[in-house]
Image 1 (cartoon, protein in one colour):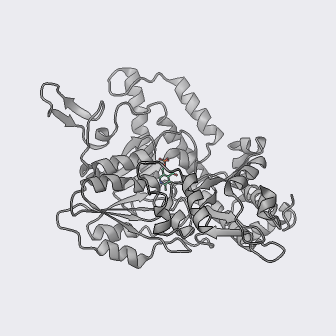
Image 2: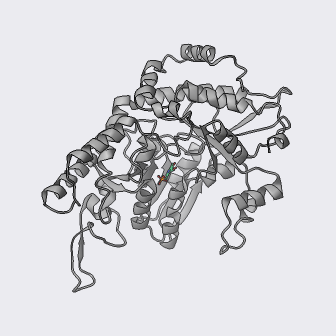
Image 3: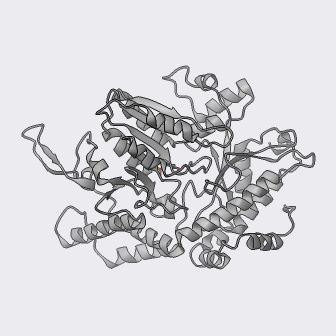
Length: 481
Ligand SMILES: Cc1ncc(COP(=O)(O)O)c(C=O)c1O
């Protein structure tokens, strides 16, 4: 394969002269010192919104730390327990410091991932008849899922749609929905992603304060935003912020956090108690237990006390690399990719790529949803594309990315067409079944490829992807089966 734009060397120099903000020396050093396994494995990693990548030093520092001490279950006062507690509390402070969140205002609850953080809010939020759960269409399913708690409590669930084709929310519609007169005394919750994990769209962070001014509590889902953007919680003050640390710096997996305003945390009523979440319980009266205040009341059982110290190490790693530099680099690469992808054509002039969502770098992140088209405009089977990419060592993701709202709008699936996948509520229909049902009935292809950039992305990655994409030039769909 050869990318028709000439050789990579020339293209890279052109790219560098157009993007002085791309610090080539820094990323070259980082790739050599921390991420050399990418080159050694011949891997072109383009799935950072799926999971970030860890640097070598993170794992080494964590191993050394474990090697140096004896750590026991926290919640006790023996030396090994206290040593573990100290590391967990250090990590909590590091999370607050990283997000510039005042410890007087914010608390950090360690969870297993962003979904776990969202569930803590959903199951404990004081929804009730007359209250509203307002959501953006492009929320991740772990935010959508909170609607089940809301509905069960008799609250209204209201969605604000994203527009076709840019997949942005209409600010007037958001304002209108926030203006909805809420029944006095009811709690109302607004949830939106700082960045869509499907389209990369970044929504205005100012909506947090606009919602607050109208009495709403706000979940700002930062899971897809935090890995390549600075979130400053002294400037934007959402009530609940879920994050997954493996998305930010690859390691450890299985640890996330709910960063919550102390006031907002106190508003939640936990549906149960567990070891670790109470100050006292008795079996002599079924009503007797005292919930621990703050984060302790939300961390069920024993936290991952050996894994959590790796969060501190990961945050230090990101600070060393510099989140602003990461942001500048991935946005420069995204701009290059968007321009190349949207100008790629077959010999008959037909476009080879359809991007879903914004095609410029304005108010978006480094996640691009798209599919590849043949010379007649037919869509290449995305799973076949994923497999072929894999044969070239390229990791991209396909499917709907747990973001049904963006997918349905991107592919213009109507309510009636979607309904065909929910005819028998008790018979589970898989995503693949549903895609087949819809494409058989309508000819639409409700499936997408996603590539996303992150901390270790460099020009060779995006170049490799374009070389791969070009392989499809002038090939009819049938030839690639
Ligand atoms: C925007 C967004 N929110 C929430 C999640 C859920 O994260 P996790 O699967 O780590 O719980 C994801 C995961 O992709 C995401 O992208």
